[in-house]
Every structure is written in structure tokens, then in C-alpha cells.
Image 1 (cartoon, rainbow, N blue to C red):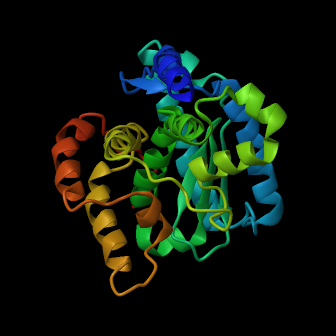
Image 2 (cartoon, helix red, strand yellow):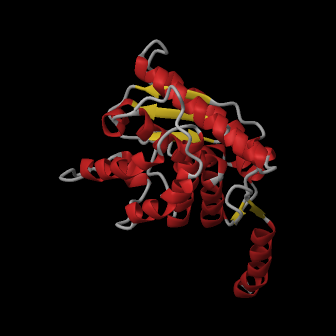
Image 3 (cartoon, helix red, strand yellow):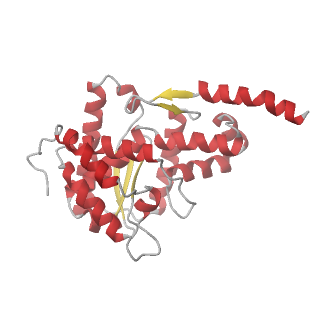
Length: 276
């Protein structure tokens, strides 16, 4: 009897998952979307606020914090203009951009849904300049606007709870839902192991991240030496930089970046006040 019920329910589950797929305007591909963006942004704001309350946020008077805010604002402007030009501003509904530099030895940065960006001070010795920082922030912003984290959270819901509706999860298992969110988005590495992005997600973030970087007036060619430095930083270390553990770097990554570069350079117009 149990097998009969399972056999009957499986097609329904698959059909429900298929009906929950939506097309992302930035990437043009279909994504599993069991989590409404409005709810994701609400959860993101809560977790972001709690993170900042417990983190050592660098003063806005600090020149590096000012650089993070400057790069973040220019990347956000580029994304907003790109979305408007391609008739998909609705994809950024609810976005209220924020940018913070946090004191931490971690080599990491992230952007949560709604445009909540954090850069760790441990990343700056590897980025070394504003152009390279823009490459990283463009990459992270693309993960957010492409809703890669939401897609991973949806996949986690399917794997752990059979695709149970988020509204049900929030009501019946709030702690488990929060843990799933934290695992999907990787806010605070002490909470758990962040789910890795797929190669497809990484290529999308690399590609559009370079476009946004270039549109913002930063040189996308900094991506090549940046990732070379990132890989070198992991040599001889038992624990690689956080960005390498959560953002898989294949041996072909630099080659892929070089293939993307000619198109990215078409968007590049150096800003008059751009820092090298």
C-alpha cells in the first residue's frame, strides 16, 4: 500500500515542482522557485540586521569602508540601469541597497536578496585595488539578482521536506527554515556549511558580474589577476579562503573569464574618478 501511495504521489510532486519553476529575466533560464522573493527579502533583512549587530562593522569614516560603499553604489547603479534598459526592473522590486565593511580575517564577501552587501577586511589584501573589488562585488550582486540563493533554498526544501510550502515551514518549523536560509546564503560561516553554487551559477555570476563591473566604470580585466591571487592564497593552507570553499574554482575558470572578457569590455568606459 505504501508503495502504491508513493507511486501515486511522485508524479504529483514532480508536477508541483515543475509548476513552481519561474524564468529569471537576468539569466533567461528557468529556476525552481518555491520561496516567494518577498519572503526571502524579509528573511534576509532580519538575518542581515542580526549579523551587523554582532559583527565589527568598520566606521564609515574609514577609507576602505568608503571604497566599499563607493563600489557598491556604482555596481548597484549599473544593475539598476541594466534592468531598466532591458525592461526587467520588476526583478529588483524591494531592493534597498546597503554596503558595509566588516572587520574579519575571512577572505569573503556576499550580497543577500534585497541588495544587502558585506565585504570582509580579509578580502582587501587579495583584491588590492578598487577594480578588483568591483569584480568581486559584481559577482556577488549577480548571485543575488539571479536568485541563486533562493534557488538553492528551494532545492533544500525539496531535498529535506519534499518541497513543502515555505508558509507551512515558517509556521511549523521556524528554526529549521532559518537554518535552511543560513545554509543557502552562508551568512555567518559558524552557523553551518554553505551550499556550494553550481558551475552554471558560477558562470552566470562571473559573466554578468563582469558586465556590471564594466558598466560601473571599473576595468573587468582585473578579474584574471584577482582569481590568480585568490588561488595562490589557498596554496599550502589547510583551509582555503571562504570564497574558494563556497565558490568552486575549476581549473577552467580563468579560461572562461578570458572568453567572457571581449563582451565585457564592450560595456567598459573608465570613470573619470576611478581608482586603480
